[in-house]
Image 1 (cartoon, rainbow over the protein chains, first blue to last red):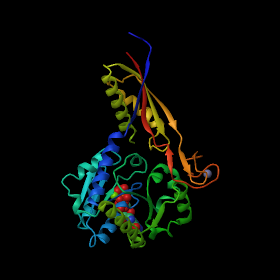
Image 2 (cartoon, protein in one colour):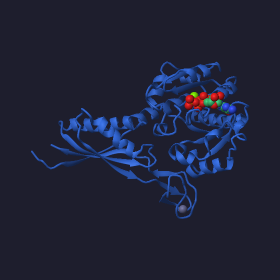
Image 3 (cartoon, rainbow over the protein chains, first blue to last red):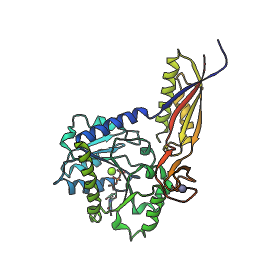
Image 4 (cartoon, helix red, strand yellow):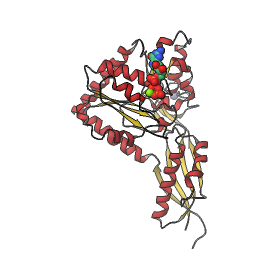
Length: 227
Length: 115
Ligand SMILES: Nc1nc2c(ncn2[C@@H]2O[C@H](COP(=O)(O)OP(=O)(O)OP(=O)(O)O)[C@@H](O)[C@H]2O)c(=O)[nH]1
Ligand SMILES: [Mg+2]
Ligand SMILES: [Zn+2]
C-alpha cells in the first residue's frame, strides 16, 4: 500500500461520444447527398419563421425536411408542418441544446436518400449549442435586428462556431434603428470572412440571395456524394 | 446551462478509469479547457461537486487548465495567440483569421489516484 497519490495520464475528449456520432451522421449525409443545415440563435430571433419561409420556397424544387428542437413544446413543428414537408420535433426536456444522438434518434426510420436538404433548428440558446457538433454541413447563426448589434461580441464562441450569419427581421430595422454596419463589424471581429445575409421572413426580402447560396452549397454536396 | 451534463460526463470518464484500475480512489481530475470550448470554467467547477455526489469520485477535485485561443496567421505564416476571443486577428500584423489551431479543448488529461 502506497499512500502517495499517483498521476496517471488519460487524454480523453469529454465530448468524444458526441463527436463520434456527429462524424457518423456527417458520413451518412454525405453518402446520401443530403445537405444538412442547422440554425442557432437566441430565443425568438426568428428561426422557425425563417425556416418556414425557406421550406415554402424550396419545397417545389427540392426534397426538403426539418428537425426542430424545443425544450417543452411541439409548437414549432406544428408551424413548420404547414409547409407540407416532413417535420419532426425533438423535445429536449431540460436539455438546452441538441446533440448528435438526438439528431440520430430523430432520423430513425427516415430514408436519407429521399432527401436533398435537411434543416435542423436548434433550441433557442447562444451558449450551449456551440459545443455540440450535429454532423451538419453548415451552421447558420441568426441575429435579429431587435436584439442588439453587439450579440456577436457577447457570444463570440457560437458566432465563431458558425459558417454563415443571417440577420433576420430586417423589415423592423428602421423602427429599432438597427446599425447594420456595426452588426457586420462585430460579426467579422469574431469570425473573419463569414458570409452574412439579411432577410425578413415577413416580407421575403433577402430570401432569394440566401437561397441561392444554399443551392450552390447543395451542388457541392451532390458532387461530393458522386465521387 | 450544459455544464452539469459536461461535469457528469467527466465524472463518468474518471469513474470508468478508476474502475478499470481496480476501484482506485481518484483525488484530482485534471482537465484542459479551451476558451472557445463553449464551457464556462466557473459553472463547470460548481457543477462538478454536484456531479460527484454518491459516486466513486465524491470528494475529488477538478483542476482546470485553461487553454488560450491560438490561430494561424496567413500573413506571418505562423501560429499566434489572439488577444481576445472578440478579435480574431493576428496580434502582430492585424490580419484577420478564422483558422483556429487551439482553444476548443475539453479534455480529461490525467487523474491523481490513490491505490
Ligand atoms: N416583423 C418580423 N417578425 C418576425 C420575423 N421573423 C420572426 N418574427 C417574429 O418573431 C417572433 C419569434 O419568431 P420565431 O420564428 O418563433 O423565433 P424562434 O427563433 O424560432 O424562437 P424559439 O424557437 O422560441 O427560439 C414571432 O412573433 C415571429 O412572428 C420577421 O422577419 N419579421
Ligand atoms: Mg423556433
Ligand atoms: Zn500575422
